[in-house]
Image (cartoon, rainbow, N blue to C red):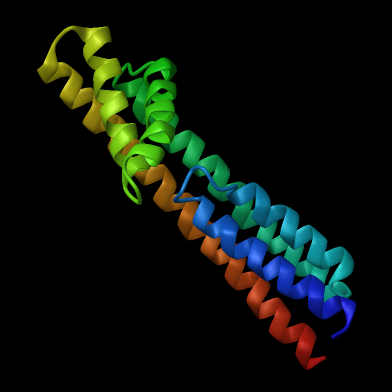
Length: 166
C-alpha cells in the first residue's frame, strides 16, 4: 500500500467523521472536512484533480458553515433568544451525553434550553415557544450544513474516482 492510498483512506475516514460532526456537535464537523480535502489535495497524489476537488469542496463547506450560522442566528434574533440560552443548552447537552446514552446530547440540549428560557422569561408558555423556535432554527441550520457537507464528501468521492481513472 503506497502513501497516496493511506492518505486517501485517512482523508475518507476524516471526511466521514466530519459529515457526522455536522449532526453530532461533539465531533468536529465542516472544519474537519475542509482540512481533509486540503490534506488530500496536498498528499493524495491526485495532482490538479485534488486541487479542483479541494476548491469545489471548500465552496460547499464554507456555504454550509455560513448558512448554518446565518439561518440559526437570524431565527434566534427574530425570537429574541439570547446566546446565553443556547450556550446553557449546549452545556446541558454535553452533560446529557454522559447521563443518557445515545440521545442524551439532544435531550440535554432541549431541557437546558427550556430551563434557561424559563429562568429568563419566568413564563413556561413563552419559554416553551421560544425553546421550540430555537430547536427548529438549530435543526434547520444543522440540516443545511449536513446537506452541504454531504455534497463536499461526494465531491471528494468523485475526485477519488477521477484520480484513480487517470
